[in-house]
Figure (cartoon, rainbow, N blue to C red):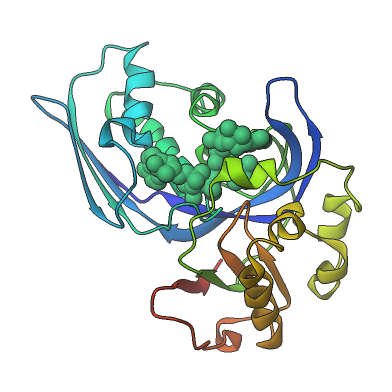
Length: 270
Ligand SMILES: C[C@](O)(CO)[C@H](O)COP(=O)(O)OP(=O)(O)OC[C@H]1O[C@@H](n2ccc(N)nc2=O)[C@H](O)[C@@H]1O
Ligand SMILES: Nc1ncnc2c1ncn2[C@@H]1O[C@H](COP(=O)(O)OP(=O)(O)OP(=O)(O)O)[C@@H](O)[C@H]1O
C-alpha cells in the first residue's frame, strides 16, 4: 500500500498554560498542507524499513513509522512488514512531517490488515506517538486545544488560496522552542479572528513562538516580512518553526523570491 503523508500549517498558535504533565496547553487552527512524503507498506517475511530523500537524524528503529507499527503490533497480531519512506517534508520545521508519517502509517496498517478501527480509536493511538499526530487521522482543518490533540470542527474555507512555504535550512527542536515561551492568555479569540476577512488576520492572529524565537533567530522575522513585501495576505511562522509561510489570493500572485540554494521552498494551492 502506497500513501502520501502530508504536512500541516498552524493558523495562529497561542500557548496558554503549563500542564502538570510537563506539556503546554495551546490553541491553534491546523490546516493540511499538501507537501507530502511517500510511504509504502507491504507484508513481508521479515521487518524492514528503508529510507530515501532527506536524511532523518537518529536510529531508524526510532522512526515514527516503526513506532506506529509497534504500537499496533502490541494490540493486534500483525505480520512482519517492509516499509519504505521517501522523505521530502523538512524536519524540525513546524510542519508536523514526522507526525504525518506516523498517522498515515497507522491508517495504512489498519486498512492493509483490516483492523476495523474507528477514526476515534486511531486518534487515541496517534496521541501516544506525539501531540501533532492525531490531527493527521482526520486530516481536515480543525480548532485544536489542550496539547494540540483535541479538536473541534471549524468552518474555514481556504480552497483556492495559494501558499508559499520557506524552510530556511534551520532545524529548531520543538522542545527547545517550547522552553523559550512563557504561557499567557490568548490576546484574541482565534475562531472569531479567522472569521474576519484575511486582510485583517495580520493584526488579529499571531503565533506565540514568533516573539519567543525572534531574539535567537532574527531570520524568521525577516522571511515573514519578505512574504508580506511580496504581497502575502497573511504570513506566519508554522508551529515551532523554522518554516515560514505566506498565503496569497491565487497562484498568479505567488512571488518568485531570491533565496539561498540550501532553503527548501514549497508553493501551491491549499
Ligand atoms: C508546535 C506544534 O507543532 C504545534 O502544532 C506541536 O505542539 C508540536 O507537537 P509534536 O512535535 O508532536 O510534539 P511532541 O513530540 O508531542 O512533544 C515534543 C516536546 O514539545 C513540548 N510540547 C509539545 C506539545 C505541547 N502541547 N506542549 C509541549 O510542551 C514538550 O517539551 C515535548 O517534550
Ligand atoms: N518519519 C520521521 N520524519 C521526521 N522525523 C522523524 C521521523 N521519525 C522520527 N523522527 C524524529 O523526530 C525528530 C523531528 O521532530 P520535530 O518535532 O523536531 O520536527 P517535525 O517533524 O518537523 O515536527 P514539528 O512540526 O512538530 O516540529 C527528528 O529529529 C527525528 O529524529
